[in-house]
Image 1: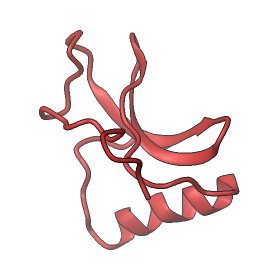
Image 2: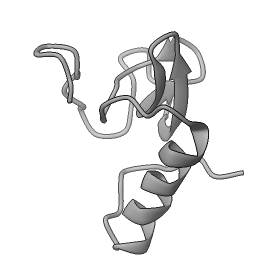
Image 3: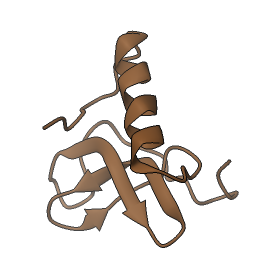
Image 4: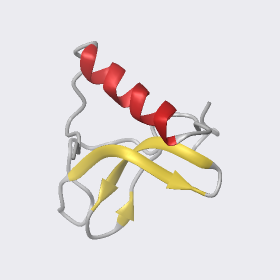
Length: 77
């Protein structure tokens, strides 16, 4: 669960700097999470709670895609 105020509202798929935002699995000291990332500014938002493993985070992102929940942009390698 997100900490109140931690998740940032998104204005479409563009960062304030003008770069495209991509939804991807991110990592922090607290664990893995799904969030939007700006190639210029770095991490933009955390959209989920934390996962203990990379696999859990990737599975959640895959489930979003499978369930036809289409986020604005998704980075998949």
